[in-house]
Amino acid sequence: MVYQLRIAWAMLLAWCVLLPLSETAIAQQRLQRQNSQVSHARRPQGGQPSSVRTIQHVSGAMTDLEALPAPGGVLVTPDTASTPLQSTLWDPQFDSSEIQCDAFPDSCLSCGSLDGSCCPTLGCLLDWRRADLWAGTTSFTGPANYVTTAAASNGRVGGAFGFQEGFNLGSQLPSLLCGQLGSQLGMRFTHTLLDGSVAGVDHRTQTFATAGLFRRVDYGLQGGLVVDYLHDDWVYQADLVQLRGEMSFLFSPCHDFGFRFTDSQQIDDTTATVSGQAADVMLRLETLNTYRFFYRYRYGQGSRGQAELQAGWTKDSGTVLGLQLDTPLQNQIGLQSKATYIIPSDGLSMPYSQEGWNLSLAVVWTPGRIFGTARDYYRPLMDVADNGSFRVRVLR
Image (cartoon, rainbow, N blue to C red):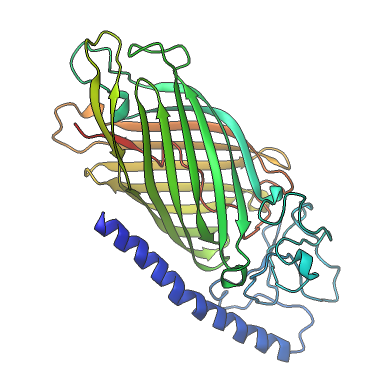
């Protein structure tokens, strides 16, 4: 656990050190451009400095806007002789991303947009335009499905299939670093084994909750740190907590490479009532620590689709492989597909009981913005925990 906490502190330290450096570079570039007489800003040949925020058209072409630290949450574009660009929270023609503190009156600083609207009815910290809503199917297995390991025991349930739904809401924190940090809060609900199993007649329900902080950029380092909570209600009841963090480097708005980890924060001792067992089964559960490298790539028209490949290892010397695809279907509707597979380490007497996988398919609705195009820096960076990112193991 000490090793994982060191990783988290190292990520936060790197963030704190590189953030002022990147903002200094941005301020210098802004001063240079103000001194020039160029009427239309162009993308520099050497690429963008860390954290510069730009505009990307649906065709994929980039328009380099005046480099600002983008701290306040308002979408703007610089004055040019051409027709002003429209806000992409509502217009699919452009992917806007330039944010500035003082573009609108004070009442709109925290969540204003180019359409002239101020804060939503629920307040600036509950902007529904930065929400993801979804519903779909899910299936998974893992060590916790094997409540008992004895041969011919009813406590060995191979897999669980069912349904899921949830939400993920992003917001900015205007009081921290002038809005450089975003926050997110989300929940996921799963309902599986609806007709029971050999372990018992009870169906299985899970409640995942995720909350944390993050920072998005167009170039350079971005990352986040969240706390995940799981309530698992089946033939046993358990409550578990883990830390999950990631940091990646964006080589361009369409390519980034990074590292993600999970770290168990709680062990739960519980009992399971299994059909056919004379006595309750004692269980000790905790989260499986995982460490994964990932590569994300945005593809398709307007870079609206996103693919992510994962590969890494577990605390038990297992192997983790993962894939995620976000595919646009309509303006505000997309399809999210996830697959995670955990290969147990060699030398186990019953390796099948330590194998784990998760498959999920969900239709995602992004109200108030076009799916996959609006590069809003305060929409959630990390997905709500699921059975792919929140793995449970049994300590016998």
